[in-house]
Length: 446
Length: 163
Image 1: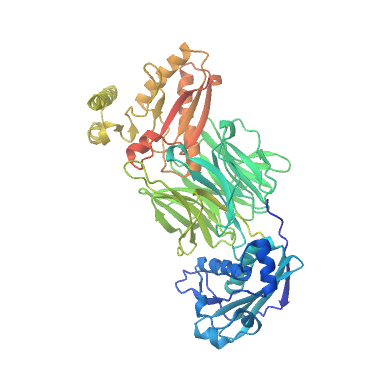
Image 2: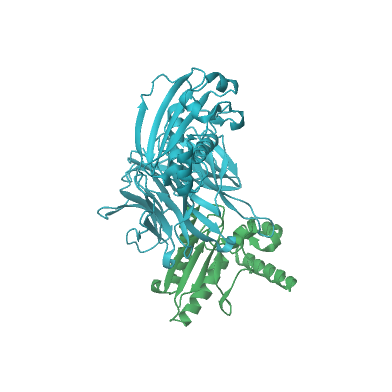
């Protein structure tokens, strides 16, 4: 369903190494960097060309809006009001009058141009350091017009990377479970959308209960739990072709699936006779391996990014706690020792942290700890929230939150939320229906 | 009608208390929500359906537990007797959890609860061939409330006729 990315990328002007503006993303950013996103300029002929195909009056402004929205929601940037801009977009892209941009307190400026060339969308953009009066970056893309939203996301990623020194996370998608209906009979469907909520699509019809979809970090495959024919099993779904298959041949419930970092294995739990153990299945040779063997509940496994370790939760101590072991199941160590119950550990793509859900004194927390369990930090507290999933750059967590019902059992809702690793910038991600179990994809373009 | 129900519940609890050699939970019983819980195990009958006369379809559990209470064992013995009398009937044991846990752990917990019920039925002579276990975790609550009483009704294993 998604076309392989057709984007030619070439550098117009070599990037200078001396970064003048720098955004520190390791701390909570209470003073987001003020910057100006000048609408991409477009000539009348190109404007009309795109209006015909894309039904958008001015595709240049639309792409800028995507960039502006992405940068704002990151919490690190403060895009300034366009009404205050003094310079016309086309002239700004040629040679910004830095005094004008300085006057409105913009420290960085994004300008650009859109052209309709041979039925293709050609976009160039530049990032300027206003105080130093210098160009920081200039890039151009040519792609099919339908990719225009992705162009906006890619520009956002390039700007983010240039200004923070780390990869962005805007050209990504979220797979999640759409929820409708009363709490006692929820209808659940797999759904997918762009990271900013656009292009929402349903992938299943809601005939059977589906839970916990997770992206393959290396491809457009998804693994999830389906109650097809009332047999809860882990499935594999190719979101490009729509084909799906059950994973392995287990005489009972398989659940809590995730991919290995190279995308070649699925790790999951298999429940039998009241105990749940962790298994892997190699997707090429179909070999199944049993990783844990304990009379307790061992579930929610997640690999370290190098694939050498696995974190999971187990109630082998009597209560649900987080453990780390080698990928063959040896050397099991408990790492959570704080008060309360700990679940849903997920290893950061950067490798240094494990995000988790904690239940303590009737409250649910999303938190992070180092991989040895030290440095526990709780990011957010609520009535009910769980299942954090990392942005591909390891800077943002997406999770879901459920509301408490009133005395009549009314008022239930489930929504997606995100929060920065710093504990700042908590925000709801809008979905057409209620939503849960989000999983963040890798960057679609690299 | 309502008074009748309350009286019935109180009687049930009292009977349960008498059965226990030491009635350590007496004080709790008196203060529990509408007398429908003992500890945090549901003892009411609001949600209970019957497989046959005198054969309740479900048993209830304490938070995070899969241990069968005295009342649950009594229910399961009645189910076992009914299944022995009706050898052509097969059952699905549907295990459930309340909403106060992570989804994946709750799936495992529901499976563990249903298996606790299955094991007990098997010790009373019911072949495992006749029993299928199915966990719904926290996906299918019977009570949509966000309070201890609602949660206690949702922590359950329900025996459902499969044919």
